[in-house]
Image (cartoon, rainbow, N blue to C red; front, side, top):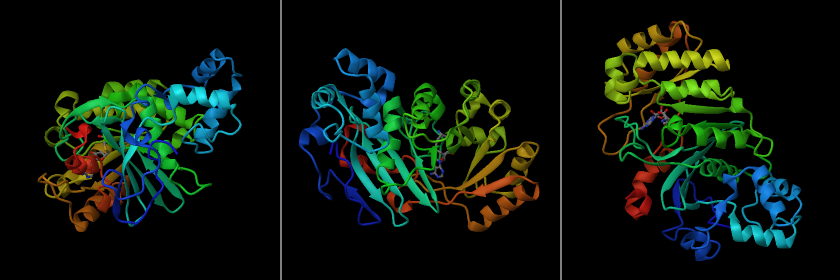
Length: 389
Ligand code: SAH
C-alpha cells in the first residue's frame, strides 16, 4: 500500500499516531514521509480522465487504460498501481514513475467512540488539513477542508487563528473524500458530503467546484450533487458566481447573528460584505438553483443565544423558504466562548419553529478526537509539523 494508508482503526476514542509510533506503519520511509520521489510525481487526482488518456496515448498505450486506472481508484479503492491487474505491467511501471494515487500521507487517524473517523493529512509541502467521516443510521457523511487555515477570522473558530496559508488543490480536495471512503467497510458507499472543514470554501471556489464535480461525475464516485453541501461564511460575489455555474450543490451560509452589529463582532468579514448583501445573495442562489439555502447559526452562551436574537433571526428568515441549522458551540481551548445551555437551545429553536421556520439542531460528533474544524490540527502543532509553524 502507498503513503501511509490507514490499516488500523482501533482502539476507539484514541488518536492513532503514525508519527509517534502508536500504530504499525506499512511501506518504506520513502513512501511514508521521506518522499523524495513523490515530490517529483503528481497525484492522478489532479487531472481528468481525458488528460490521463492523452498521457497514456503519448506513451504508445491504448486510451481506455486511463478510465481503467480511475475505476481502480474510485470504484475498487486501489491506492497504488501495483495491484491494477488488468493494466499492462509496462504501463503500471510508467505510471508509478510519473504519478502517485495520493499526494498526502495520513499523519493521524482518530477514531471516536461514536465511530467518527478523523484524518489529519499531511500534504506534499508538509502542511496539514483535516477531514472527518461520520456515520448516523444509513448516512455516511464526509466533511472536508478547502484551505490550509482560514482567512476569515471568525472570533470563535479554531481554523482561522493563524490566518490562511494556501488553497487546497482540486486533487487534495478529492483525495480527502476518497481516503475517507476507503475507510468504509467493503460495499458501503458515501451518502453525503459537507464542505464544513477548515477554510473558507468560496475563497477557493474554482478548485472546490472542480473537485466536487469530479467526485460527483460518473468517472468519480458518482455522488449526486444534491448530496453535497457547501458551507460559506457568506461571500456575496462568490455566492452569485456559484449560482451562475448552474450546479445543484446545496449552499449553507454561516450567519451566526441576526443583526449587522452582532455579526460584525463575530464574523469580522461582515464589516466588508454586510449581512443584507449576504442574505440577498442567498436568495439569488435559491432562485437560480432551486435549492433551499440553509442558514447556520453557531449558538454561543450569553453572546447570541437569547430570545431577542431568536426573534430577530425569525424576522430575517420568516418570509424565505430557508432552513435554519442551530449549532451549539464546541468550545475551543484558549478562546473565551462557551456552549449554550440545552434550555437556551430549546427556547431558541422554539421561537423559530413557532414562526413557521424549518429548524434543526446539530448534534456534536467525535468530540474526543477534536472533530470540530481546525481543532485537531491545532492540538497536534505541538508534534512539530512544518505545516503548523
Ligand atoms: N468557512 C466556512 C466553513 C467553516 S466550518 C463557513 O464559514 O461556513 C463550518 C461551520 O462550523 C461554520 O458555520 C463555522 O462557523 C462553524 N464553527 C466553527 N468553529 C466552530 C465551533 N468551535 N463550534 C461550532 N461550530 C463552529
